[in-house]
Length: 106
Image 1 (cartoon, rainbow, N blue to C red):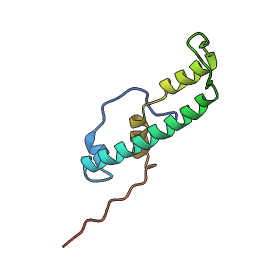
Image 2: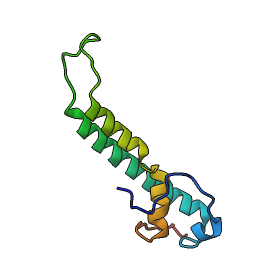
Image 3: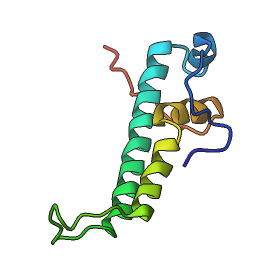
Image 4: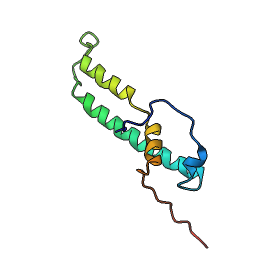
């Protein structure tokens, strides 16, 4: 889901650059948080789907053993950039579409 240039660590960002597309940093933050939530939900669904293959209804404490493939899948997702970082990169690259709700004028 993340592209190659998405950093895996946090970094300082210029708020003016982030606010430029919307004209308001608070609107930008709302857009970024909603997109990050979408990304997190999609990643969680994908991880759950991949781990379903390892589910065994008759596991007991004595029967549980380490499944190296399952561990590797989990480690892969742990190494991925955080959804918020992916959302910021997508926003900077113009890959996030958004629209402002119409305000009622009286």
